[in-house]
Image (tube, rainbow over all chains, first blue to last red; front, top):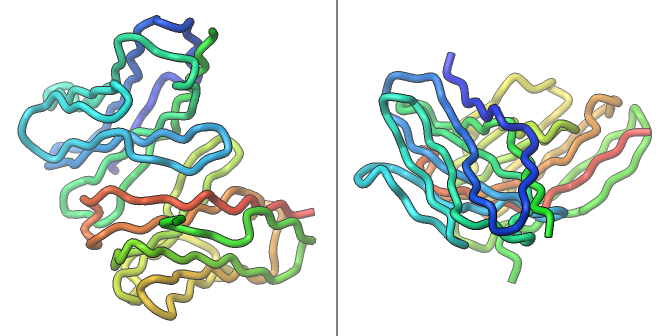
Length: 113
Length: 114
């Protein structure tokens, strides 16, 4: 069965540190990929998405993600995090031929000033 | 203007009661969803509707009944509430039902069962 894995459940970084959050999926077909962010007490917001084309996609607030098909991965990166990036980050995948998006279990990022 | 609005924001009630959560979107989207987020932040889809037609109905107890009076509204009614129903329920909307369009989420309804 298709699945989405986020292995980092809780990440703690100091401001200005670089960030990489992992997202892996299990499916051999076409995928559409998303990263959402949920700031404390707020709703989920789209950070970036990949449908096709350049596997390196840039999103809002300086975030980017790279789709590596051979590794079934879509890791989220940011070169220098800020305290305001403290939030929960969710990877989501639409598996080709299916109509629902499957969310990962989320990674809680805590940035220390 | 709130794009996807849910009411109420908080709902505290006793086991066995029946309650409803309302959701409205003003984005002109034709697809709406209900998700349940448990205490571990796991987000799981429950239902989706496209133009008032049920598209996705996950393995959800039949105590949960969605109703879509029009494509801008998707309400969730829950009968005979149980302790395990305690969670945050998110409504979302998107354009198209293929799932390949970004979803816009509401602020969530935190349901607590006493």
